[in-house]
Length: 423
Image (tube, rainbow, N blue to C red):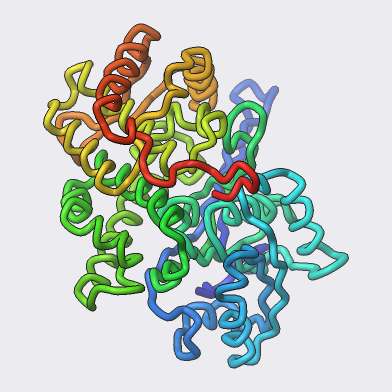
C-alpha cells in the first residue's frame, strides 16, 4: 500500500500537476490544476485473523492506528480488532461512535474531528485513519477526514452491504442537511476499502436486505450477469448473509463474486469520476427522487432506493426505452428480496417535484440526467427532463400495481425505527 513518495510530497496517496501561463495580451494569468488520488478495493476473508496482512500492510510500517468504529460494530468485533493490532504490536487508539441515521450530522463530524485533532490523537496529514462500520460511519468519518488538514487519507473497513458496495468505496462523504439527504459533504474517497462478507454474519435481516438494493441498482443498469446471479442466488444470499451463516463453500464463492461484480460495476464509473465532474453516472439509478422523500417517509435507505428504482423503471417503460417484460423482471427481483416498490409518499407531488428540482440543481442545474434502464436490463440511458405530467402518470401506474400486492408494495422491514433513527 505504501508507494514511494516523491520528494517534498505531502502524502503518498495523492499526486498533483497543472500549468500556469500568461494570457496572450499579458494582462492575466490562467491556471489549470489536477489532483490524482490512488485508491484500492479488496475483497478478503477473515480480516481480523492474525495471518491476514490487509491491515498490517498499512499500519505495520507506521507503528500505530487511529480508528473510528461504529458503536454497534464495536460490540460485535471490537475485541477482535483490538486483538489483531495487539498481536502485531501496533498501537491502536479507538473512538467508538454512534452511527444511526440521526447521528448523520455536522455535530458528529465535529466530535470525530476533536478526537483526531491536536488535543487527542494529533493525526498527521499523511496518516490513514481506519474507519470501521456501515454507511453512516463511512459518510460522517469520511467527511471528518476530508476536513482534517483539508485532506487526510482513510481506510474504510466495511461491515454492511451498503458500505461494502456503495458508501464504503464512494468518494462522497456527507451528512444530512435541510435541502435533502446527504446534501452537505465533500468528495474524498478512501485510499483503501476492505470488504469481508464474514462480517455480515451479525447484520440483522433489515440491514442486510436494504443493502441488497445497492447491488440491484448496478445490475439493472450496468451488468446483466450480475442481475442473473441475483435472480438465481439472491434469496439464498440473504438467508445465509452471503454464506457467512450457512450454505456451503460454493455459495460463499458466489457471494464474493456478487460483491466483486457489484464493486467493479460501480467503480468502472465512479472510480474515475470521483469528484463528480460528469453526470453520466449509472449508479445514481434509484437516487434521483429518493433523497427528497427518504426521510419524509421514514424509509431505510435501500428501500427508498428500491421505490425510486420502481418509479424510474416505469418511466423508462412509458417513454419506450424498456420493454414491459424487463420492467416487470426488475420489479419481481426487488419483490423477492423483500424490498419496497411503492410508498404513499409518492402521492405527495409537492415533495416529489421539490426533490426533483433539488436534484436537478445538485447535478449542475441544466438537466435532471435521471439514469434508467434503456433497451434491456444491464444498459443505461439518461432522462434529461421528466415533466410533471409524465411523473404523475408513472406514480399512478405504480400505485395501481402496488395496490394489487398483499403488502401494498411496502416490502419487509422497510421503516426506520422512529425512536432511534436506526438505519
